[in-house]
Image (cartoon, rainbow, N blue to C red; front, side, top):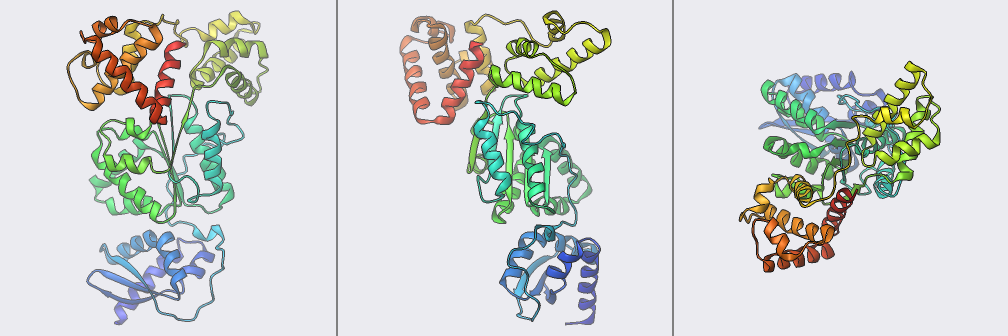
Length: 442
């Protein structure tokens, strides 16, 4: 091997030494040697197979970046056991040795922890699964997929995983990012021709927390990137957690193989909190703001804000402002003023409201539900609407058929049987149906 190649490897190690924690560099990178560099492949000598696995999972992206900076070329790296004598690495590697070269920006909010997450019947399973994941990265529920409506605490729970994991595993290589921010970063990487760096940045993580993955709708390039990133992370034993406003199979235009990957671990939902949980949330938020909120006022507000934690928080902020700025008494009149414009008047349940809710959930126009269109999504939406019209309004088969574009009663009977059968064999669909029923029955 020529002296020039040895010099290149020395430069690579010097670069890594300036970026990696000293203990990590001495334990894992200093013992390496360059065996050969041919045909765009760099073969790196390591003492044993343990080194091979550790470097492959924790430092491959770092090495690739360093090599490209030194040589100006995108090279492949292969690890080969050369058997040279070095001090053995510890049997259980301290987590701080896995420090990254380039950590994605830490977007975690310190207040989003498990301690500040109010647990109720609607989120108990999701919270338990999230805690388990934080304590057993890569070994429990991988991936974990949490879904639920807007403002129910998905982001809080996702960031709580990150905050807890950082405490348990110092030096953890992790990233929390909304899918929208990831998409913008990908667009920039394509424009600047730095897509390799983008891939290495995310495929070398120990923990990826990806928020609002329903943003992938219609974004083929991002779907491709997440598919291959997920595969790389799972192969490396890294943990991945996703959130969405709906289960994987209900996200429109999502590639089938990505749906399969997203649903291959544990899929759990967060339901709107019950009254007791909403009261507890309000009282805790008030305590964090050092505001003495009477429990009867908390109950009064919680009884009117039924489905969205963000609206609860907004109402509390407005109540605090009204009380502190005007000096008015904390009573139901002040609470009503705080609730003004934040809570819409309740609408009576009718056929149109049911069809609007179904159309919104399945992302199809109401006109399509009433039309002869028979695509899979429209047909399921149509049959679901018929089922809800029957069970929530107790309409006759003839009336339901008339409302759904003039269908005959046998078509309605078939739809009712189909939805009943699907509900009994598919827990995820049963959960969706139950959620629609509860939202419409409020």
